[in-house]
Image (tube, rainbow over all chains, first blue to last red; front, side, top):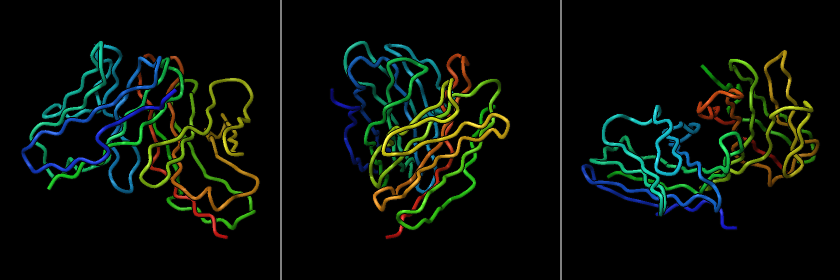
Length: 113
Length: 115
């Protein structure tokens, strides 16, 4: 059973471009979470999704950021018009049930030039 | 609101000695508590969790943690540290039966085990 997969692992964008991060949860997991980690800091919750539904997006900036988890295919975190402050590691996690431990992917390291 | 405090940014311990990484939490009602470990340039790996039952929880790689309700603590321990345990450790909490409240992580404690 493959773990949580994220791609790309590294992404470089210039200011103003769009960044699209993908996450494939573990097989059988219908709950997906996105987190952002800045250097030397802990993880900050961004958004929680179940298939086709956003359950909680309280940690996601209201502008430029969006997330989806379609019926088919991976979950996508989209950042439009990136700025230097968006540079961070973005982690996706999945779980089979909401109460369970979350399994994390290897992360996408976004660098905005 | 939920919160987690990891009071030590860095813990240094000699190989073979016992180690403790501290975590205290604040949550309304009963907590679900988790420990994760992060190696350089990797995602977080689950170590152990407390949901209910025995206050002493045993997890992966010889780690254990003790839930102390009166002190609102969930310290991570290992009887004999290995150099390979050197990593960043995160404690996390969410309230039990709290609907869709997200998991809240501490800032992390960097453990360095010296040979």
